[in-house]
Length: 219
Image (cartoon, rainbow, N blue to C red; front, side, top):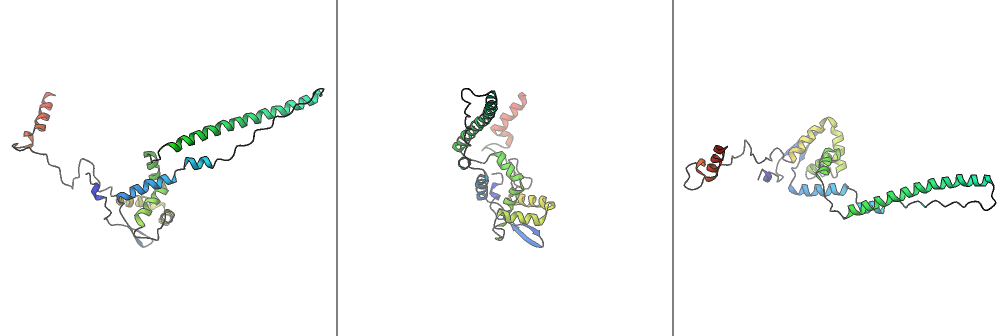
């Protein structure tokens, strides 16, 4: 099973900060579910964003033109006033159109299932917040004083950025990534032996091996 059974939280990992030894607990499968929910909780809720939109400004008032028998000066002033109105009206119409597009987009997004994409996942892991979150998960069982992600961030500040690489290495061990193997197996693990059918004297006598040999000869 590619070593997935190693992820059971029994490994001992430690690091020292200001003379104090901290014990990191390896992640279990439950941590990955919790992590996805945590990342989702940080993503904005489209419906809440929709509710928080400010009210639209009122449309500009149409100016009233001069009456019959007005002077040329009155007509000139009205022309300037109407020009300013037309400019404000165009700006207002543009804001209305943009607002309608935004509202439509938020409503459509609210109807979609919420999930953590690969891009979301990678961005979170690359961030300092993500590192602090993983550190908090690894420390909280053995060190209740690290009671939140901000507390883990403060611990990282005490360590200094020069040790962030060490934190990443320790978190990699808490993920047990060095124990998980791909389908090619491990040099230290058992090597999968070929299945020999009853009556066959070697792997070369099995039907699969014979077919493979014939295919190779044909090529």
